[in-house]
Image (cartoon, rainbow, N blue to C red; front, side, top):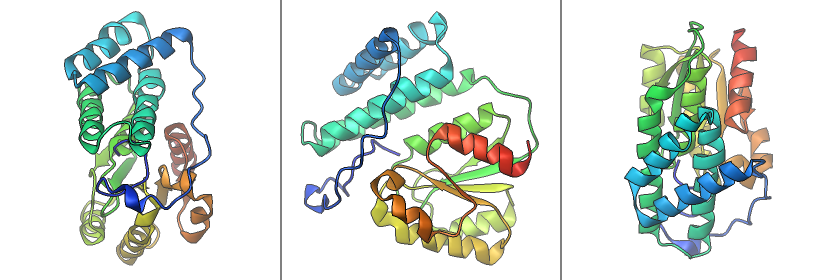
Amino acid sequence: MRAGAPGFNGNRNLLTLPRPPPAHVIQTTPAIDTLRARYLAAQLSGNRQEALRLLVDEGLLCGVPLQELHLEVIQAAQYEIGRLWQENVISVAQEHLATAISQYVLAHLYRHLPRDPANGKVVMMACVEGELHEVGARMASDFLEMAGFDVRFLGANMPGDHLARMVRESPPDLLALSISMPFHMPQVREAVRKVRAVSPSLPIAVGGLAFDWGPVLEEELAVSFFGKSVRELVASACRLLGV
């Protein structure tokens, strides 16, 4: 997922949804607050090497857990990038650049993930068709891997037909779908329908910022559970799959 602001293809005329409640309150230390501010500044200046250096040299090497760097620095900075874009403080190009930096940083941090022993369960993770915001789904995949799951991350904009084919050919123990924008809810329903046609009993989880914008949307989907945060997703997956 890119930064979690409403909109489509940079067109602010489509911002018809009300602002979501301020659910993403980060409880951190002054040191983390400073690190996040400097990371955000590196994003806004387009300096990906400095962004990575900060999280490695002043994060990991200083004993900050990788989970905190994911949630309290990268994720929180992405929320701020989304807010700045929504309020027309930064351009679409700047938002894309900042998000690309977070993707670059996450890719480099991947090899440092602390992993629990493999639990033998496979989770397939995808963003639904039309959903281009994949940073959150990538983070969720990393957290699932840290918990011992074998994750098949399919990335952004996954057509329902191809998702169903992948499920049929390489069946997972759990399918997790990510959605940031509520106007992609029809694609979620379609993806669930097509997957159910090939695997009626497969557990399906759904999560993402769309459910902050419209909590009532949860009631419309016949899925196993909703992961409103990466930690909740991991905990629910462990309970459901008995690991």
